[in-house]
Length: 141
Picture 1 (cartoon, rainbow, N blue to C red):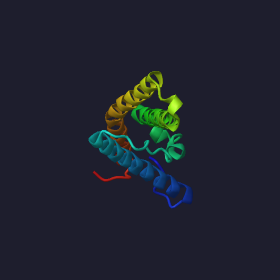
Picture 2: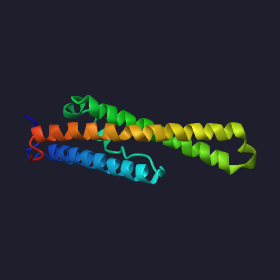
Picture 3: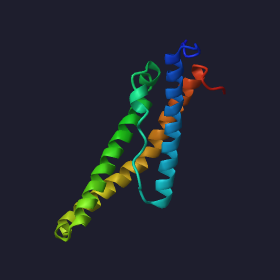
Picture 4: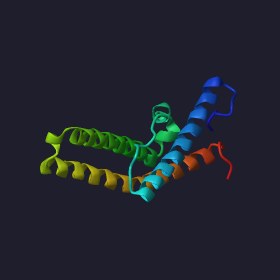
């Protein structure tokens, strides 16, 4: 069994990190629903807790959680690339031509596709993490 129930400060921090990661997944689900409903992406997904939990055995055990982390990273990278290209495109009239417009459109379509894929990825990872937390006694059924 996981020794997270001890009063050791390291273990207490670990417990906080696990709950923070779970809450962050929930927030990312909310961000997905808002973007999907509005049909407008205003931000990337949250990922600042991932480095603190990625090496835990309870995380590594679940492929769905690793897929989630990779998908968030990939989406955020694509979002950043799109926003940078959009700023470059709209920043100077000489950049506004049909070829650059097509590239901007292609980046946006790719981002939209990745967004649609995120729902299943977040749900699957959240369920895996929740099952793990239940089995460790961190959550009650």
